[in-house]
Image (cartoon, rainbow, N blue to C red; front, side, top):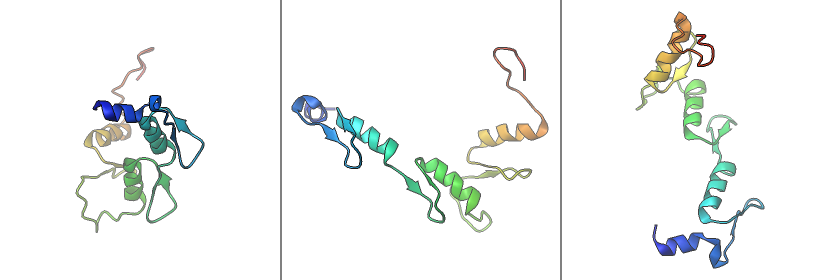
Length: 115
């Protein structure tokens, strides 16, 4: 970051960063950007009213509710449980989930050592 950009972001220049959608006033440009992303950014499913803030959540929603995996050419590997139909996007999460079906409890409580 150079000095001009730094100065442009600071209130010392007499500029308050105002949100155009609500009464929020930020001290820095980056604070306003964070505010907008947290409160005013919303992703919407193309097929239903579902909304969320994170693209990964929307992707999982679409896979679980709208995508026919037998007809869709997906670039990303999808792991679907054959027992309960849960969908995971990573092999690690899928394997961790599968442990619940076979009764494995590899994680112990740090306080009482119960598994």
